[in-house]
Every structure is written in structure tokens, then in C-alpha cells.
Image (cartoon, rainbow, N blue to C red):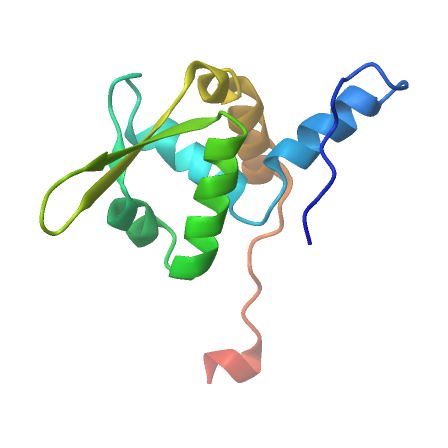
Length: 126
């Protein structure tokens, strides 16, 4: 089911936050943006689809494709397809995507400081 997108960000107090979160929500969008920022620091640098997939081993190919399409539709990334055999597809951040860098870096810093590390139970350890 398609989500309703905000047409403007002036609907009510807090609405800009809601609209922003709607644009970057999704289990993998933040991670995709982080990897594009971390691995391709220069604006002209890009990552291939399989390079992104290797950095996120728990994402399915379909989910990664869907999340990339949404990020492209929202203007955060640019997709380049090269007419080769086999086809080569690369992704890079747009200026709009790069504008999220402080947000993504702040989320990473907060997660490093506050997210609980995975706890290994004794049953898993055995």
C-alpha cells in the first residue's frame, strides 16, 4: 500500500519532523544513506548495487531494490545504469541526500552511545 506523502511542511507544529521521518523511514534507508556517505565521501563517487548489498548482509535483494527506488523517487540518491553486459548500476547521493549527513551521523553517534549491544544468551553460546 502506498504511503501518503506530505505536500507541504507547514501543516502543524511537529509536522516537519513527521514529514522528514516519513521520507527516511524504512528499516534500511538510514543504513543505505550511511553507507553511501561513509564509502563514497566525494559527491562524484558512487557504490554499485552489490557493494551495498555486501555491506548489509541481512537485507534481501528485493528489499534493497525497493528502498533504493524510494530514495531515488524522493531525490536522495541518483541511479546510473551503464549499458554493459552484464548491466552495471551505481548509486550516489544527490545534494539533497548529502544534506542529511548531519542527521545520519547524529543517529550513528547516538546509537554508538546509547543502543544496547546484542546480548548473547547462554543457550546461544552453547
